[in-house]
Image 1 (cartoon, rainbow, N blue to C red):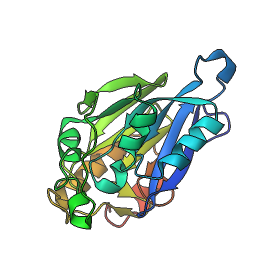
Image 2 (image 1 turned 135 degrees about the vertical axis):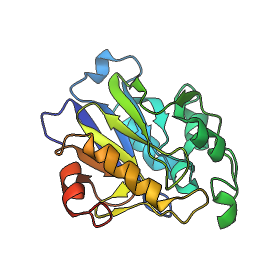
Image 3 (image 1 turned 180 degrees about the horizontal axis):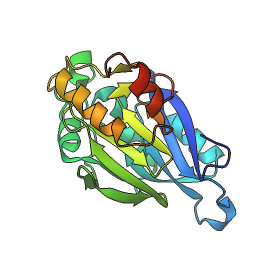
Image 4 (image 1 turned 90 degrees about the horizontal axis):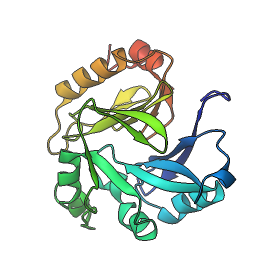
Length: 222
């Protein structure tokens, strides 16, 4: 992210499976002028709630919205604890992600011996919907194939939060229940080709990349 970007993105690695959790907020906003702190969005709080909340507090932020890309346990594990601390925060995702996140079998937590259900989503997003969160403009893009109902989130012209659909040099697994590798690759190609080549991609695991780099060199997309 360029120094003059209107957006700041803080990256945390959380949980046993090293999920990339992102704290997103408008740059240049005076925390003293914002009651309760500068509003922020958290994308995929998969665990380590204490770490996430400590960073939010240190930055003088106020958690407004939690965005879920998909329902797998490693991406949703911190939601309940965060909402206990910030019950006013809104949980937003697709209808299918909301349904699957509330089922320990579908969110895969039952398969690792620690079954749990995520809290009910407060806002249901649909494919192609534009919405405002933390004063920033977002667009939801449904990209199934890794998990049914999975969404990537496009933040203005500044960033793509891709969840587990595309990584640096790879794409998401499709061998989980509801997975479809061909559908996933088609969806990723369609999504990336609709975006600026210079747009950064912030995936659910591993380092950031760009649209240009993945379209040019990702072996799954060639």
